[in-house]
Length: 178
Image 1 (cartoon, rainbow, N blue to C red):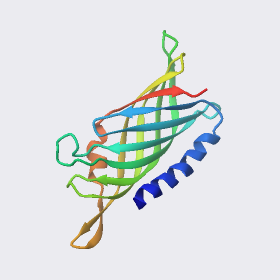
Image 2 (tube, helix red, strand yellow; image 1 turned 30 degrees about the vertical axis):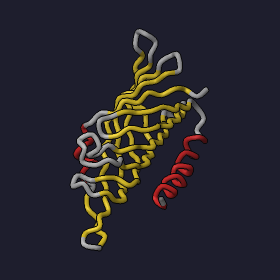
Image 3 (cartoon, one colour; image 1 turned 60 degrees about the vertical axis):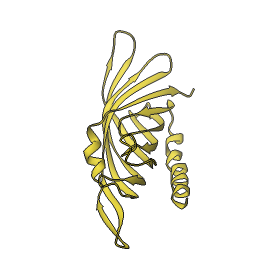
Image 4 (tube, one colour; image 1 turned 135 degrees about the vertical axis):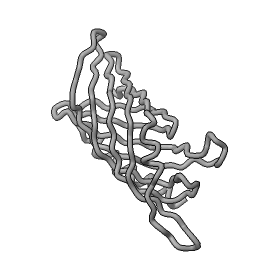
């Protein structure tokens, strides 16, 4: 319960920089075989950068029946649009990449739940349509540590799921807020 409060407080502070950006703001959901969640995206038109906050439910071991409880985390990222194209339909396509940070209570590869903190990286394509709906296809990798309790002692280990599941694509469906 205490960990949930900490994530809620951190999410409020992480959303504040995204709200201060001038430009387009999007709210939506994302789906993947590894996780799913809610996403807030704020794009700064003048500098071609964006701020993204994801509230995530982690599915590690959930679909295989190994566990009945998902993990949860919060990921904040700052990215840049590296290249832009305009498609014949009027849709704008952007290639993006950027760093971020992840924190939460997750299940690692060996099945143990624990607090997890990681540096995150993302890359993908962002499709901005004229009607206010946007789609994004991206990949994210998380390099960090996972706290485990082994024989009553807390130990830091490499968060292996963050690297193993980095090849699973994420599909974002976002709606412009203004």
